Image (cartoon, rainbow, N blue to C red; front, top):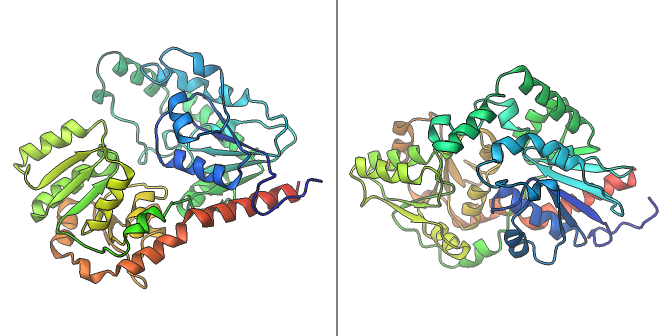
Length: 394
């Protein structure tokens, strides 16, 4: 590699390959961190919402595949088109780029660069292929009409020889990458288990600065906060039931397919005065709520990393989480004490903690210091040097 590589990555031409882009989530924020590390980067994705990408990644060139023109690609035909993703990513050409960085929880790693290194940032090996317990796919009965038929078509491939063929393809795609960086140690373990690859670990970027703007406030109010998608697999039902049982107020931020069901649950429990649904809020509103909450409830299972708990800590707020997987790497129970875990995934176990919880047991500054271990600046520095090392060894 003759080109002089600078630490800040300004002269490194990076092709960022990512799963489809049409709404904000952890992977989409991850892409922003990569773009911050490599200002000349361009995005490659199977398909995207042009308005979303223009707003969220301004002044960045976005390449798409043939899937962009398929009817209903972001709607009812999604599950059928799922089978086309590997070919979509393999169709990209990366002439003029120094390196490909794919960030994937599904098929981004299937990109096939010629004569340049390929670094994959693995959010997790696809759970719909490898981990039934961690699958976030919904039950067929959650759908109606044509959507139910489409999901049934996709579900037909689960637990069959066809799924095992796809597992083989997925493993081969991972093994063709030059290097793989897991987003947490728990993901690193999955990569070793399913791909037989010794991955590195680079934690995702968390923009802690806006969250720490309210540092001087430190006002804790007598209610708990849930922030995230309102989906059964995210544990919001458990959070609601535990708060009602403990008789403590809960504010729920976010939307999702199970919002109506959770609102009905609150009515059934006669707890409308105790549990409030705030829907979607702006980042500024979310940060303000986090800074004032008694604690963030994070009752998620099989979490790969968990950005929301880090955001809560950055706001000076402790976290109550289930003792499992990625959150064990971000929340500390002692020295510094930034949260507390419950060990049984049951309403009674969480309710007991909520009844006895005291904000005064946690220092906001300790929470902020813990969150700074995952700041965007650290991610940028580590990724730049990681890619530099890969290129120097080419």
